[in-house]
Length: 102
Image (cartoon, rainbow, N blue to C red; front, side, top):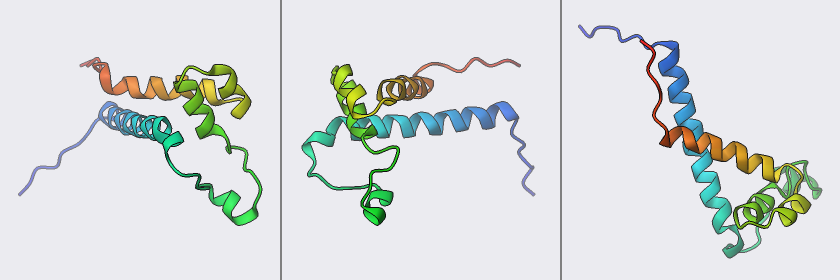
């Protein structure tokens, strides 16, 4: 018989943080190559209604912020610069060692 492996809440939180960090890295990579991609509306809300959703412009704003154009990022979406900071923090969880409190 296989013994039951129980994970602690810290292990579960660490796994969630790593998954969020991987997602952040993937999104930052996507936003960095966005200008070289053809213009395609990927927003489902915009495809269905023809109107911009509250998040429209955020990816372009992230791209501008990653290129150092913070004024352009703010004009594309007001939350672009704080979103870059949040995504960078999530991505940092992959690079920094997690302290073990046993």
